Amino acid sequence: MPSTNKLALISVSDKAGLVGFAQQLLDLGFTLISTGGTQKQLKKAGLAVTGVGEHTGFSEIMDGRVKTLHPRIHGGILGRQQDHRVMQEQAIAPIDLVIVNLYPFEAVIADTNCSFEDAIENIDIGGPAMVRAAAKNHARVTVVVDPQDYALVADELVSSGSVSKDTRYSLATKAFAHTARYDGLVAAFLSRRNGDTEASKILPEYITPQFQSRQELRYGENPHQAAAFYVESGVKPTGIAAAEQLQGKALSYNNINDADAALECVSQFDQQPACAIVKHTNPCGIALGNSNTEAYLSAFATDPVSSFGGIIAFNQRLDTEVATRIVEQQFVEVVIAPAFSDGALEQFANKPNIRLLRSSKNHSPASGLHYQRVSGGLLVQQKDTDRISRQDCRCVSERKPTEQEWQDMLFAWKVARLAKSNAIVYAAGGRTLGIGAGQMSRIDSARIARWKATDAGLSLDGAAMASDAFFPFRDGIDTAADAGIKAVIQPGGSMRDDEVIAAANEFGLAMVFTGVRHFRH
Image 1 (spheres, rainbow, N blue to C red):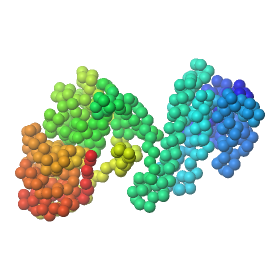
Image 2 (image 1 turned 90 degrees about the horizontal axis):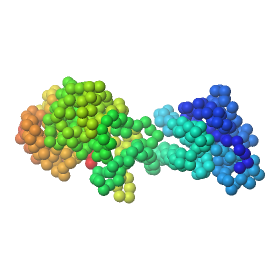
Image 3 (image 1 turned 180 degrees about the vertical axis):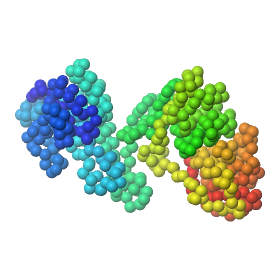
Image 4 (image 1 turned 45 degrees about the vertical axis):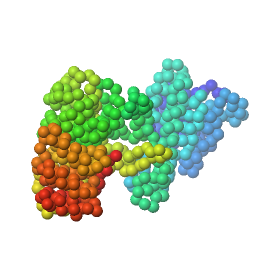
């Protein structure tokens, strides 16, 4: 190579930790080359830095659009030992370290006031080119796209004078993932702009989701299936991906899946303590209470048998009392809550295999999209986050609901949205009394929900019923009325709505239509 001087090229939009890392590189004997805003910040901090234009002998042009696309930059990054002669002939110095992250395209387009022209100007060209070049030549060059990796690189340089082969390989892999996600964001943005329907503006022509492996799992749903937990790259973790494990065995595939469902259940409620017990992603019981203990006991009482080995989620901090009741009353796989008192942690420590998860406050997926893999393709839809109020409903029965019946119906409706179709939920007083879910026939779900309530010793007299989709026949209403149900909430829209309404009137039930269906598969 034509020079023994170590060169580091720095061009970053995310300047977190920049000055400290740059100073370390100077102390290690590196010469710094930089561009635009990065160069200004380094100079402002009093660091010696050479501008790219000075290094290449070619000034930036076109308002900075062309500055690093130069043979002395890309030759310096891509040069190998066998390129020694040509590099000497062209006065190209090897660049050993490339620290680049890209124009903040994602942040720019997230601004609702962003113009199309601003978005286009924030598509980085030179940055991805340098990153990809450095990653390709990782046999010699170290590429850093994430400020979180500054310490790793600095430590290796300090301890051994170079960055290890394994680290260069790992950073190169990360760099290609970084540019792939960036290109995916640009493609999705442009294809949304090209859409001529409302759906196409939400669901782009091209989707390039990117997820990073967080942990390998012992196995998937069954022992013969390999599995891992991936989290979405480049976005702030939410929901189960943001939860912190405080104790217990490693989470399994089924634990994570069920904990996500349980967390979604309780995240609907924020006015008072709520508890959800989930098994195989279906709620066994959900209840509100004046305390976590009251909410837990009511949720558990809905279906004590199915709750065995379930996942328990809360929307409020857990205290010693509820922790004691859980430990004494049932076998549980996972308990998830936003916080735990010291006393609660002490109680759960008596059962060290229980997995405790501390949830984040934000439970809503950042993308708002739901993905379902099918053979040869991917089904993509908006996540079902539709919420209704009393004003959204239409009373279709002769008898109008009472105030209590309205509360019971709306509570049951929230639960039905999260149970697998066909779903029937019986509820009263802010608690579930019986849940039937995942059946091929809606009448079977209604019968199962009634049987569960009876088996648990719970009366359905005066309770409300929610159905996630319309009743195709009046038999569901007949079953409900026979069980003592007094109010029904359902989407409506069946060809036999008149027959169903007539059945409700025959039994003196109050019935409202939401106009919204909540199939969940």
